[in-house]
Structure formats: structure tokens, C-alpha cells
Picture 1 (cartoon, rainbow, N blue to C red):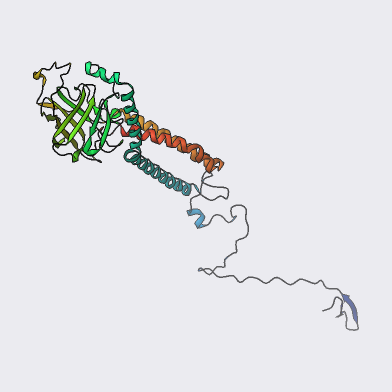
Picture 2 (tube, rainbow, N blue to C red):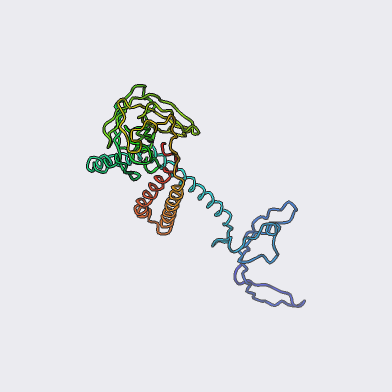
Length: 364
């Protein structure tokens, strides 16, 4: 059909009227998408864009689904709090296990490896003190009581290639320096018994090999009373409840350490007798009546108070670690945070390990 077309419309029986009509063009309708029937036979209405709730009301799914609160939604309106909480719990649990494992490994390395460096440094200092200040050592023979940790003698066992300075006292702190002479006992070589305790494996483990001594092996002691040689008479293990040792002569020495390198359940003792005549002590005045047949070994348990100090250092380590993690997440400066925190973490860890080592049996 053209834009202008002529129609003839009859108006009467005798004639026609010519008229020109200009029709309006109607655009064709767009093709419609086929509508899939629902299981109930009703057509589905394609969802259109909407900014609010439907005017037709909520559907069954919307009624049954819980509506998340404003705190549980992120910027897109999606519930995220349960997922984030679960992820954080997993992250914190993994972090706690990692930190605990690292602390345990650090403690074992310190106790069985690096504590030997501390023991060697202490021995060099003590041996130098003995050679540079002999008057303090010679004053012991007159009855002067040495302070705990002060060197009082030199112990030498040729078969074990052992050469150690002996300090006064048998506490855990004293035995970190080296073998310790039980307080109140006579000096080696004097009438009576001199008990010397030492560590088996930690801080150099000076007494780690005394279990291999044989009968007749020599033990030499150099102190203010002179130079003395002892001969091994007995090597035995005693339980924790058995704290007495038999006497072999009027002048003798007893070496004591743990019976195990991991979980000690008793004591390993070596009893040696002086091969020459004993030197009279100021306390005994050469009286043979002062000799005893049995002797009570000193208490060689750890220091419980050191556990509190170890806990404080461990807490300081955790605080520094938390601050480092916070700075990494906030400013994204990983290497800078590690460089600043690593020395502090190492120092706190070493102090915690040293304090914890004092809680263990002093002869471990």
C-alpha cells in the first residue's frame, strides 16, 4: 500500500464520491519469546529489574529463608558473618598451634644444643676467676663459706677428658654454671663426704659420661686444701626416694647426676675414695668420730619460681608477635615488621627457655 490511495465509497444509488485517505503506518510488533509452562501449567513471568520488594508479596523461598541482619551483611547485602567467623576460628587455631610448636622446638634446641654454649662461656669465666683470685679459694679451707655460684675447686676425670670448675651450691641456677658442691659439706680431700652434682645433658652435660666409669678410675680434685686423687669404688643408680649413700673411707667424694637424659626417674651416683690420707677439716679437727656411714643426698629438684618468670617471658613474646601481625595487616609492611620484631622475639624466647630450664631437675 502506498502513502496515498483512492477509495470509492458509494453514497447513493445515483453516484459516487471520490475521496483520498492517508493512512497511518503502524510499526510491526517485536517477536515474543516462547513461554515455558510450569509444572502446574501456568506460564512463568520473566523477572524484571527491581529495586525493592515485589509488589506481589514474598515467595515461598523468601518466606522460608532467614533474613540476615544489617551486621551480617556486607556492601552487596550478602550474609558473611558466619563464614568470616568460621574462617577466623580456623586461622586463630592454626596460629596458636604454630606458635606452640615453635616454642617447643625452640626450647628443645636451647636445652640440648644452645645451652652448651652458655655452659662453656660460664666455665671459661670461672676457670679464669680461680687462676686470677686464689685468695678467695684458699679462704675456704679456714671455714669461710663461699657464696652460691662462686668457684671453689677444679674437678678432673682423665678417662672422660673432663676438666671443670666446681661452684658452691646445687640449685638449678648454680648447676647451669657447672658442677656444684653441696652446701655445708666438707671440701674434697677433707674428712667426710663431698657431694658434687652435675648436669647430664644440658648446659654442656659435664656429668653425661660418669655412668661409664669403671672401678679404679681416677677422679682428681684441686681446691684450697690441696690436690687429691680419688679411686672409683661404686657406680650405681638409686631411686628418688633413696637419698642415702654408703661411705667408703673417711675422705670420699660422691658424684651425682640424673639417670636419664629425657625423663629422669632417679639418680646416678659415683662413689670414690681418697687414695691418700685425708686432710683434717676445721669442723672435724681430725676427729674420727665425725665420720658417718650413710649420707643424705641434697635435694636436686628444679626451681618452681622460675616457671612464673618463664610464663611472663612467654607472654611478652606473644604480645610482640600479636603486634607484629597487627602491623603487617594494617600497613602491609611485612619485611619491615619482621626486621623490627625478630630481635625482640628471639630475646624473649631465649629468656623464656632459660627460665623454663630451671624448672626441670637441676641435674638434667
